[in-house]
Amino acid sequence: MKRVLITGASSGIGKQLAGDYADDGWEVIACGRNAQALATLDSPGRQIHTRVFDVSQLAQTRHYLAETPCDLVILNAGTCEYLEHGQIEVDKITRVFATNLFGPVYCLETLLPQLQAGARIVVIGSLAGLVALPRAQAYGASKAALAYFTQSLRLDLHVRGIGVTLVMPGFVDTPLTQRNDFPMPMQVSVQAASRAIRRGIAAGRDDIRFPAVFAWLLGMVARLPLSLQQRITQRLVRP
Image 1 (cartoon, rainbow, N blue to C red):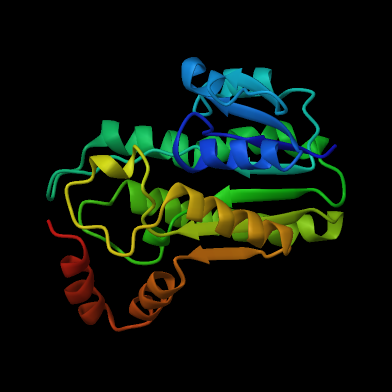
Image 2 (image 1 turned 135 degrees about the vertical axis):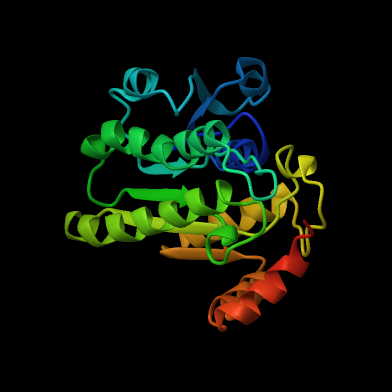
């Protein structure tokens, strides 16, 4: 039986992935901060083990991920906080980077030495890392940094036979995005997100972006002169 470890499995994409992989016959190690939410993943026929800890805490992460060899690691845990217009809110930026960037780094410090050739690491980023968006100085920057980290890591792990996949979703209907106070074009369900991610992983893809049209549009925007980018993105997400 293959084993997958998923962080951020308490809700949203991570919870959907955990259930779907368990239903497909995988042994699932579901990690998250909410013990009650993780407990709802358990059902007859599923092989799910839960671990309750915070990936932004290095000591906790080292403890709970020790001796956890896996075939697949999905680093999904993430958070989002928007800054007030034109203000530098250090506490918010620190919290977002602690989870979105250093969380995966902390996990990999312990997990990477346990992975064998043929294993795959999947990092959940965001299309928000492609272009600058209003009020997203913390979230967007953390996801842009995470994308660079993941792509660089892929180059170094290739010689070890370990695959590295970067997933860049658009807007997904989760408890996190339900707090947003702006329009979210081309939003997809967690079920659709899970399907896209699992299909991409099964195909061995290094880069997974969805929804396709929205990913293409943002990719095109990222290639435009900066002045045009700013005009467009300020309309995509209203201040």
